[in-house]
Amino acid sequence: FYGLPRNKDNITLVAEPWRVPDEVPFGAEALVPFRAGENVGWRLV
Image (cartoon, rainbow, N blue to C red; front, side, top):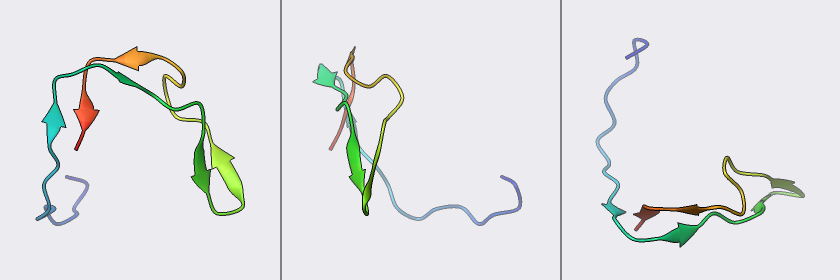
């Protein structure tokens, strides 16, 4: 995809409610994630 090699790592998603944080620290700054403060049906483990 886009000429990049395929990732060899995996992620696992669990079907359970999870609240997206309002902000995520990033160095001296903070990022606001997509759907911040909302509940979603999947959680990354």
